[in-house]
Length: 428
Ligand code: PLP
Image (cartoon, rainbow, N blue to C red):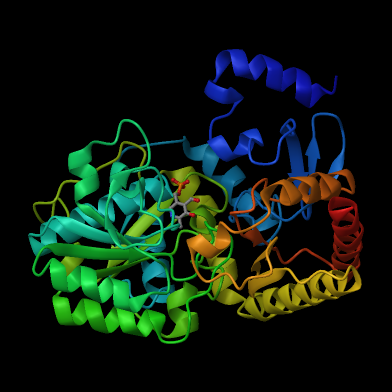
C-alpha cells in the first residue's frame, strides 16, 4: 500500500468520502487521490515522495508557481504581528485600492473568505438592489456551493430550476432560472417570461467548470445588452478567470464590463480569500453603508491580505506575465494538437491563454450538453496514464487545467511527450 492509500483509508473513516472537497476524491477517474506533502515552483510532491508537474495549481491560485517567494516573504512578515484582529487594517485599504485599479467593473469592493461567499453575497446584493428575487445562471457553470447555484437545467431545454443536491429547497431552486451557455435566445425567452422579476444574471465569462468553454463572439456583449434592457444586474463570476486571463480578468480581455464581479483563488495568493465588487451605487447597499447584510469574522484577514497583495502587486507590476502565459498556453496546446494528430485522434481542445481542456469528444464543445458527450472512461484511463508519467491533471473531464509562469520549455516538452504516450495508452 502506498502512503496515499493508507492515508485515504484512514481519512474515509474520519472525513466524508475522505476529502474536504468532493473532486479531490478521484471519484470521476477512479483510484486513490494523491496526498500532497509539499510543492515548489512547477512541482507537487506526494506523501510517497513522488514528484509531479502541476497543471492544476490548486485549481487556479498558483499562477506564478508554488511557494512564489514574494508571497512567502509577505506571509512571513505578516505573521509577526498576530494572525487576526477582526478590525480594519491598512492592508485592506491597500487591497481595495489595488483591486479597483486592476478590475474595470469594480468601483467598490468587499473582501470575503472564499469564492462561494463572494457569489452568495453578490446575488443577495443584486436582489437587495433591484428588489427582485430570481436569478439566471447557465447550465454547467459552477458558482460555489451556495443553495441558489446548485441547480441543474432539464436536458437541453430552458427550464425552471430543479435542485441538484438534497438539502436545497424547492423554493430556493424555483428562484434560479437556467439556460444553456452560449445561447442568447434562451436568455431572452427567460427574461421575457419573467419581466421585472430577475435580479441578476451570473456567469463564468469563460467557463472552467464544464471544462474550458469560451464565450462565442457576441455572447458576452449580447448578455450585457439584455441585462441593460431588462434592468438586470450582470455578474461576471471571475473566481477562475480573474487576474488570470488579464490583470483585469475576462472583462478586460473581452472588453465587456459587468455590473458586479466575484473574485477568489489568485486574489488570495493561495490563502482562503474571495471578494465581490461592482458599481458604487450597487455596492453602497451593502451593510453598514446600506441595508443588505453581509459580514465575516475573518474577512480581510491580515495574513490572507498580505499574501494576496504580494500576488496582485506582482501581476499588476509585470504585465509581461500575461504575454508569457499566452505563449506557454500556445506551445502546450500546439503540442497536444500535434499529439492528437499523430495518434489519429480528432478530439476537441478548448483553449484561452493559461486555461485549456482536452475533451474526449470529436464534437465542438460550446455548452454543458456537448461537454457531457465526452468519453469519460477514456478520460479516466488518460488521466492515470498521465499521472504515471508524472503529470498531475485535474481528476475530472469537466475541469479546466491551469498553467503557471514557471512551466519552462523543457517541462512543456515533457508534458507534450507524456500526453502523446498517454493518449496511445488510453485508446489502446
Ligand atoms: N465560482 C467559480 C467560477 C469557481 O470556479 C469556484 C470554485 O472553483 C467558485 C465560484 C467557488 O469558490 P470556492 O471554492 O473558493 O468557494
